[in-house]
Each structure stands twice: as structure tokens, then as C-alpha cells.
Length: 134
Image (cartoon, rainbow, N blue to C red; front, side, top):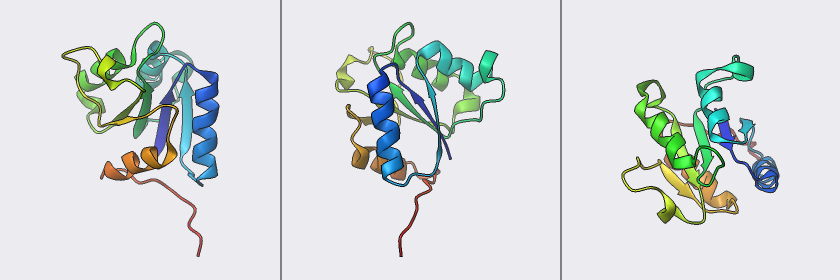
């Protein structure tokens, strides 16, 4: 499974990646820092021409340039991304603009790893690769 993290805050990027690594998540994690770059990644434009298709997008709501809910609306409007799960990372889900499509899940910020892993597990068509200890 490919995970795309769309986050502009360097501290939140490092925290999210470290939490996932510490939990033995083996999935590839790709990072972009704003909404337009997220769309470039999804549509394989510019430097992202060879980018993999993400299975899960962890999308910050308060992004510069193009807000997370606007990115979500563009993703939901394109049927080729109909099977891509999107989780909005925010401390204030009520800040989503009225009438915008809803994500598959909300994840609190700073990222709460048990909550994030639960979100991934609840998206039934995805699999999270974990190191299992016997």
C-alpha cells in the first residue's frame, strides 16, 4: 500500500513518519507539502511523472495555497480516484467548507498513531503491512 502524506509543517511530517516507523509500518510513505503538489503527484505531472498511485492520502486540512478540503473535492470529482481513501488530519474538522465532500475519516493533530492505524484498518479494501512478532 502506498501512503501519500500532504502536510506543510516539517515537524508534523517528521512526527507522522517517525510514529509510523516506530509502529513497524512497512508501507511506502510519500510526502508533498501543499495542495497543488498533491494534485501533481496524483496526476503524475512535473517531478512526479513516475509517482505511484496512493491507496491512502493523509491530507492536512490547513494547507497553504489550496486547502485540504479543496484538494479532497478535486479528488472526489475525478472517478479515477474513487478507490483512494482520504483521511483529513486536523484539530478542527468543523473548519471544512460547507458543501465539501467528506473524507473517509478524520485524524486528530498532532497525529495520534492508534487513531491513524484504526482509520487504515477501517478502510476495508486496504491492507497495512506491519512487522508481526511471534
